[in-house]
Length: 482
Ligand code: GLN
Image (cartoon, rainbow, N blue to C red; front, side, top):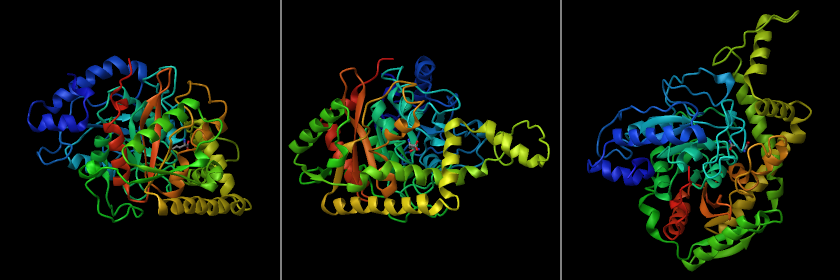
């Protein structure tokens, strides 16, 4: 058996009983990487095939397990470029809190995965390196922005991965690649060391082959951190232990606004089948309404771009990464020309679009018309969820309106790209946890994902439902032919 095909919980067992070593796992990952990476291009650069665990104790929860992390998460001494030219050559001088926690539990930081530049996108086509391809169909996108992490897990070039999710960037690629991805509650996982996109929306989360691994990885990375003032001091439950608590009597809402015309019929069918299966386990479903859903995309693209324009102001050619070999411009101070030319050459098209949009909605005269109003509607979207989650334990929706689209299909039409986030962004606006997991395949063999959303800090409930479903289906066992 090639060890790269196994999950972390399977590998941990064999590692503990000394049947295998982590060097075996790395060597099998290397063979797989050599074979499939030229087709998939999931990694931002060559991973570390030789590494020994910083900690070696049997009680460490991820002892000897390689973890692949998105290129926007800092790991000490490693290139961390956010798939952007403006950060080329940037070596992180410290570990993000999630990386520190992984290392404390014996995990190996295996490599950095490809992404849309600064996490702007839903397809990985905005990477300044190269697009990542969907392992199920190399002509199609893996989703984004954590497309590299999703594709690496789906192609068995990774055991566990981390992504980040601002508007769907963990869940949508998880859905399109047929893996499990969780965006935790805002504040559950420290953002310290995550290169910021939109600070009020960003969360780091696990991307894995199955639900048990997801619970295991969340348990390791979650928790309060004094370096992130928005992380919350609530005890971290043992997510793995509560997986098997059962789901009989759980109440799950289905929002009518999410099942509208224009939704792919195969996605609709897969969701209906999943619902029927869950009903047979004693889950009770009811139709619910989230009336402000129709404003979510607009609100998100105001708030997210506003925050991004502010966060990206720090990339000026002085402190980090790239600096243009600038020419002096008449009547302009040399420093100003350097800033301008660095930013003009360093940022890709989508990053520039977002900086311009964000600067516009924050500018005096437009601030109240756009930004302040968006914040008000954000509060209404959150209220919709509060109401429904007062009566229901969870909410079930599709993750993405369609399965993986073709590379190039939406690149000329940013709006249609933005609309592919329709089911995922409200969750970030409301700060809630949500998981995507495979719930079927299209006739042409593309994975379909469903999204399970929960109350703040109730990741346990989400995992319970997800686990019950997974135990009775085989979608997570399917492998792409590469
Ligand atoms: N696709 C969304 C965007 O482009 C979400 C990205 C993300 O979650 N990082 O903003």
